[in-house]
Image (cartoon, rainbow, N blue to C red; front, top):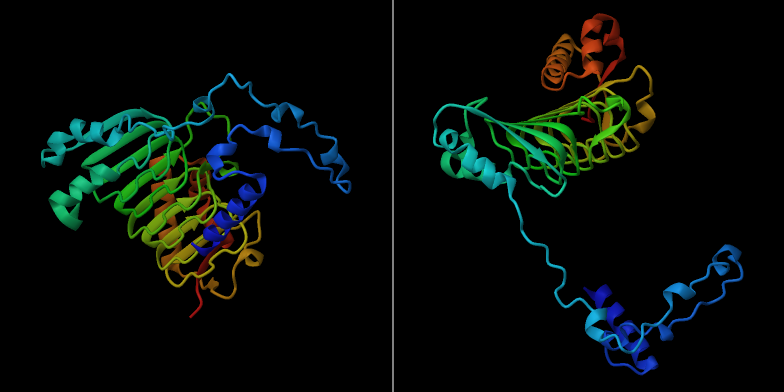
Length: 328
């Protein structure tokens, strides 16, 4: 607050020097601007800024120079409300249902409102496994499957923005490329940053790479991803994550719980770990069984070629799996 207050004071002083009382008085006054010379930066001095310094004719009213409506976006179509209508019998405890929708990136927090309604009706128990399946095609906006509860599964064919599985608490989210895509999943990002943020349960399977801060503050969910950016598993406290591709720097920073498995045949993990917080653990038979189960689920939900190949030659590939855990 103090920082913004000081900025406001400085703006006020500059306006006073120019002879004005408010910012609204200088809207459109490009005549008050001039290009300065910065001789040490020859490339900047060669820019011609005159086209953007042209002042509008006086015949134009100031109303045309200022948007007084603040560009408030309309609420528009809410997919969750449609899902609630389509799944009404199921939400009332009658059978199960599989739904399909085409989506775009303006559709945010898909599944959150449905989960809220289920929690209101059933509490933490959610629904029986396999009760509500939501199949999506396209690009999901932020927070796909946020707070998704048990019994709800979202299957996305396409890609998604940041915060996939934020607050996930029992539901299942799967993301795989569209069949028409020519991109190699293990080499391309399919979900954005900060996915599984604060998740407490459930599962996430992504046939592709994730952005940065995957599973930050994960507190109980399981996830499979085919690579990710920096700060992987930051502040993680519980859950299990299997990574089939390379990650960025600062892996495991602040991690105090949970387990992570890495397939490292073509890259080196150790230099990317935050050794202040995490260390390698001994691989036991139980760990390999967990990895196999995660790989099988990954193939079942996403048809991942990478996971399928690993399963076919698992005994030969076991040597390339490593376990990372918090330092004791």
